[in-house]
Image (cartoon, rainbow, N blue to C red; front, side, top):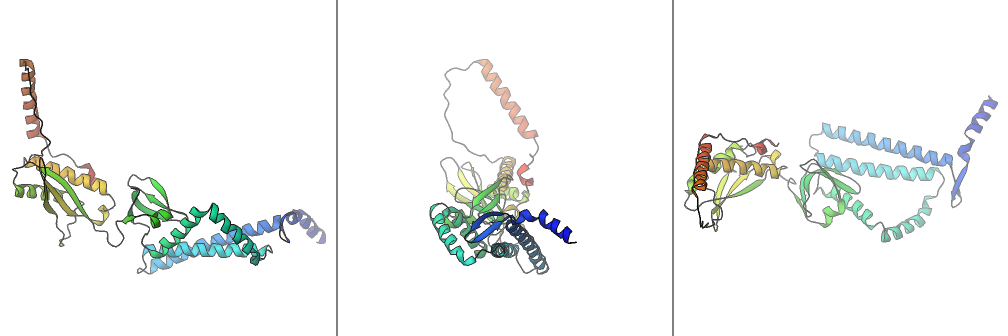
Length: 323
């Protein structure tokens, strides 16, 4: 038995080989292995604790998903810091000597780690303030728009409507202006501008455009006090300018480009069906010569265009099916 223990000791004797010293403490292969094991166990414990918190929150329907996410992230940071301190203490390093390390770190922050510390601090502020939550649809000052997928220690991941993931530093959310489309309410109003020729009956325009809004599935139709409206907004140089003012369903708020395209499509279709002219800047064309072949071709083309307008069906609106 003693011989077996001796052989085992010789087999694992390399773990006591000294690598370097931290002060008076010798760092060996065994101590490095011990630190790695403690950190791995800490990470596993953190994951289990996060899953437990999510399961408890699932039973309590009163807790918002954003609050659960913030709680799990902060719990993960705290557990990992505690595990790191335990791992360092397990190899015999006096934690009070970390004051020297903290001083060196302070110098490093002053020179090279400013952005890292700024982003970390901003991430903690975002988790506590709840002005930005996972699932929110935001628009940054830089023009980036998308849904918040993750709020991490250094950056936030935003997924655009084109399914592109953009990594944004957390400090940009704190230092810059951010438009949160879904912070308190998911119902939003959209204004779609269009113009018609002078002399057009305004009531006919209103009827045509409201019918167009009714055909778009994104229009809020819950019978509330928010029905679609048509506003006359401007007497333009070449047209009477209107706006369709419509409230959107919650699921349509995150798709502003597709939703606006759907309304524009249906508005154009309705105006054509009612024979309402959509004006454009006029230009005078003075023709000096005109041969018979060109005149005949022009007449035939006009007849074909007229026949096509009378026979065509209502076109399909692809943007209405975007969601």
